[in-house]
Length: 322
Image (cartoon, rainbow, N blue to C red; front, side, top):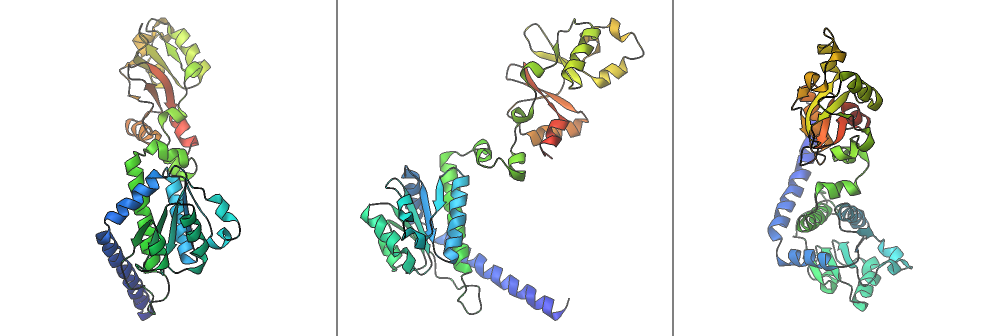
C-alpha cells in the first residue's frame, strides 16, 4: 500500500470517526424536546413543510422525502422562493421544520415570521441554542456542539450528518407510532427493486376464472382439457366443500404414461396434500419455497383451505422477484 493510499484511508477514517462520535452525542442528547417534535408532527392535520438553505437545504429535501415515503405527507420549500410567493404553499394545518446550523440564516427570516403570524408550529433543527431560529421555534432541537470533519472546521459535514440522522429518527419514530406496515411501505414504493421485493403473492397470482380446478372423480381426459385450457401446467383437485386436497402436475402425468392414463380419475393421479401458500405471503418467500422444493407452481389458498389462485415461477420472474 502506497503512502498516498495510506494517507487517504487515514483521512477517511478520521472523518467517519468524527461523525460517528457526533451521532453518539446526538443520541445521548435526545430528551423531551424530541418527543415534543414528534407529537407536533403527529398532531398536524396537514403536511410537514421542510425548509433550509444551502447544505441544510439539501438535507431538508431528503428529510421531506423520507417523511413522505413513510406515511407522513411532506414536501420541501426553498426559503428564498418562499419570500417570493411560495409561502402560499404553507397552511395553518401544516407543521414547518426549518434547518439551520447557525440558526441565523437570513433567508429563513420571512418563513419564521410567517409561522409566528399564523401560529403554524415550527420545529427548528439548529446548532445555535440561543439563535433566532431556536428562540422563535415552537420546538427547538439543538444539535450538540461537535467539530466539523473538515480540517478547517468550516465545511458542513458533521453538522449535516447530525441533521440527516435526526430527520431519520423523527421519521422512523412517527412510522412506528403510526403502525406503518410493509404493505403501506409498498404503496409508496411501487417501482424499483424495493417495490418488487414487497410484492405479495396476491399481486401476482392467477385467480378467478383462470383457476384450473377439478373434482377427485373427474376422468383424466377432462383434467387434461382443464390443464390445457388454463395453461398453468397443473390442476387443483378440490373436495365437495371446495377445499384443495391434491394437485395434478405435468410430473404426475409423466409418472402415469406407462399405464392407461385416460382410464384413471384425478384422485388416482394427483399428488395429495400439495404445498400451498397464503395470498398475503411475500412473493419472494413463495419463490424461495418453489426453489427449495424444485417445483414451478403453488396453489394459493385462503384460511379455509379453498384455492383462490395459482402462482407460477414465471410470474415471479416476469415481475423481477428474485
